[in-house]
Image (cartoon, rainbow, N blue to C red; front, side, top):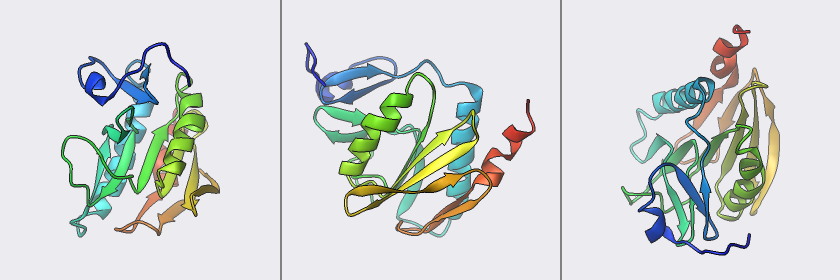
Length: 180
């Protein structure tokens, strides 16, 4: 990316609204997510949070700032973090990052964020497609994402996380299958 103006985290902190910053380039986030997007994020958070009752080192968050460096700050829809020392923003790679795809941000999530998360060694990257009711899961192996599959009705166990969690995609998408 090449920009006329270059911004840093100090600039980012002053902005109103929802933004991401990639290599010094400010990117406005889409308008408020549609209800389906918000409902899916809430269901993901709830499923993971219920599994963390016995895990004191990990937590699941929605829309937390992940400061990668001074000119790159991402805001994943949902993250699983473990042993994170900072309360202001994430400083370590999340163990799992979920992005719920919207038409306005699909390219950013599928290409730019994919590459950044892969390089930063985020263990799992999950792209959730609300219109198709499919999730694509990628696992980081030796600094490369390997696709684990497309999931709609299955359960997936995230075995490389500090606190073992899973997502039941049948349960996640069930409510939306009955709506037409």
